[in-house]
Length: 78
Ligand SMILES: [Zn+2]
Image (cartoon, helix red, strand yellow):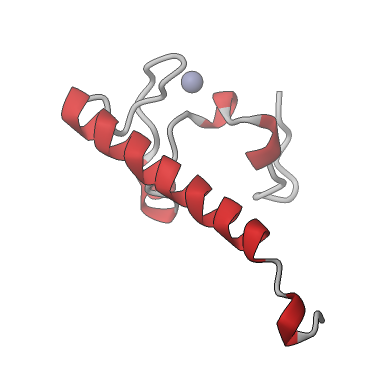
């Protein structure tokens, strides 16, 4: 826990900017009619995945490494 006067606003802003980037990208894809498809391979993104993470831009195979998590324990990945 950080004291109130040492809130890392810069880190908060970085996080906020990342979210805004995601929104921006999603709006671009909506305008391009590519929303809901992987921006890397064009595969339609699973509906439940879009519902959970509406700003996602790639299919599970092409997730950026940082976003790749063990979301389903027991599932073997490639
Ligand atoms: Zn893909």
